[in-house]
Amino acid sequence: MPRTPSRRVICLIGARLIAVLMILAALAGTAAAHASLNSTSPADGAVIESAPAIYRLTFSEPVAPLSLRIVRPDGSNLPLDKFALRGNVVEISPPSELDRGTHVLSWRVVSADGHPIGGSVVFSIGEPSTVAPVVQETVDWTVRGLLWLSKVALYVGLFIGVGGVFAIRVLMPGLFRGRPLFVAAIAIGILGAIVSVGLQGLDALEAPLPRFFDAIVWSTGLGTSYGNTVASALVAFAFGVLGLGISGLSGGIVAVAGLLATGTSLAISGHASAASPQWLMRPTVFAHVAAVAAWIGALMPLGLALHAKDTVAVPALKRFSRAIPAFVALLVLAGAILTVVQVGNPKAVFDTAYGQVFLVKLTLLAGLFALVAANRWVLTKPTESGDPSATRRLVRSIVVETLIALAIFGAVAAWRFTPPPRALAAAAAAPATTHIHTEKAMADLTVIPGRTGKVSVTAMLMTGDFGALDAKDVTFVFSNAKAGIEPFKRKAAKPGDGTWLAEDVVLPLPGEWTVRVDILITDFEMARIEGKIQIRP
Image (cartoon, rainbow, N blue to C red; front, side):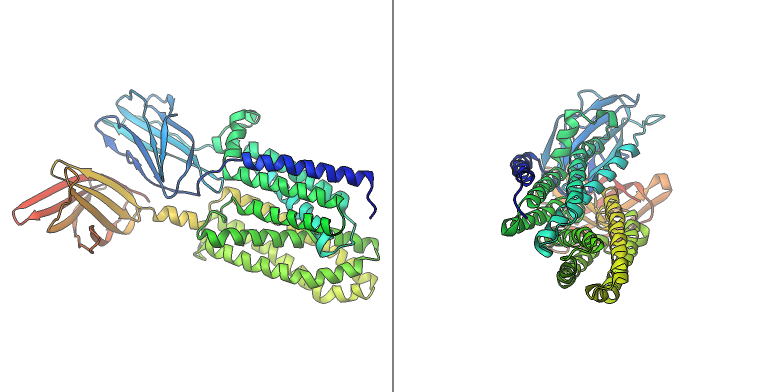
């Protein structure tokens, strides 16, 4: 195609967008990895004699705090703005004065996949209040609905817009149909990407929609790892616009750069990219996204060319038929790996919200692959031979494929609000811990997993001044007076790593348990130390 003034304008706009968006990518902050809360100090449900000197929230991985506050017995809120990050631990300085009664430490943090998580720790000073303050996480469905819609718009821009440019420049060069639609898709993607930053900030801060334009909302949205996704997506959109204005080899190179930026954008945040092992998961997400963009992006220009009976339509169909099986195979392989890691136990497909969304996606994919098979084995050859009836049927099938792809985008966007089973399993397997300290002896005691059922109990023993304590025998004694469970004993063994271990201990009920450690120091000296530990359901 000859270079026209409009194409020169497109090239100029694309180049300027890339320059601006590279700066935005550098400004976007990072956050820590997807995490679950392992333990707290004070423990949830604990009754302590005096106000703690410091609060500690220990997560499975590092996090970035978004909102920390104390709800006092009278229901008033005190923001907690003094905290320190020490690895996986958030250490929070408490307010100067706290009254007797029940308090709630309410926390909200963001993980590396850009997903905010929150919760509360209830503890009492002196004695529980008659009526304890209750803090519940509120969900603003308007914000979440708009966030879901913005992510669908982002996918439209990446997969249909940028993927379409890759299709006409690399997969099916010489095909010119669909350019206005690519521009529209990219414009929708840019709008969705930008708006989603503010909505991400609102959701992270649990702020209402009227605060959409607050600076703190946007800085919070950009400060999560999702900010990097948006920056990379905008770079992909810039390459897509530029690719529409450049022909020949240069246009192909720019289109490939757009496809690479598309894969990168969704590989640097999200549930799957935050999973372990990172060396496998991020490249797998990248490959999955790039394959989807190459496939779905080719549908619109191919369908339009066939419908218009362009002379290049049949050659383009032949090239598409040769190339697309490799992309589909890559998509299926990467998707299978992601499913195995994210879902883990097949039962979770039916027992979790994530699994139910996966079933919806799987059903849509089954329909999509059925159409693909029919197109390839029934309609492609007759269309290539010039059969007008087969051509019309193939065009209709391509339209249906595109609609199913849009429905899949909607299902995938819903995963933003559903933690994957692997994260739920990690939270369920998180240990419960407590530190018992007396003048004579102390113990760091861990229950794995920290929930009801069969558990293992380990203890690291020390003297009261943190010296080594070489005990001759150790027994763990558990009781739960509130539930009417009298003390029961379990002998501990010394596995050789400096700890004492009791396996196959059964804690049948959740709640606060009393645990006593009987330590035989010598044949004539016994130390008994006692503490509380919180067991999850």
